[in-house]
Image (cartoon, rainbow, N blue to C red; front, side):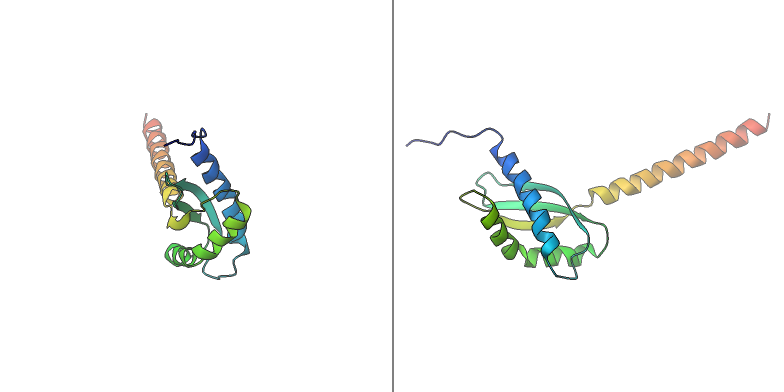
Length: 128
């Protein structure tokens, strides 16, 4: 049995294209539960049957938005099918990505620690 020669980084290129095309398609959705969505990453399975789409949200409820996006997944997949030039368009699975949320929390903690350290050093220097 002959195998197709694998194209280097094809999965990554397809994931990037899906991410770009999905961003445009999501902007066209009229569902009020879908707020200001940013697509952070797309991971495509080896057989291209499934794609996990990680998103963050500027405004809105993450759980409601995730539910709305997963309900619209069939419509979005159909839109991708029209745009992508690939044989199998993956089934989409949307997942809220808390990475940016955690990064903002960490930045706030660091800023608070630095402010506390600055106050402590100011107090220490004035007692001499």
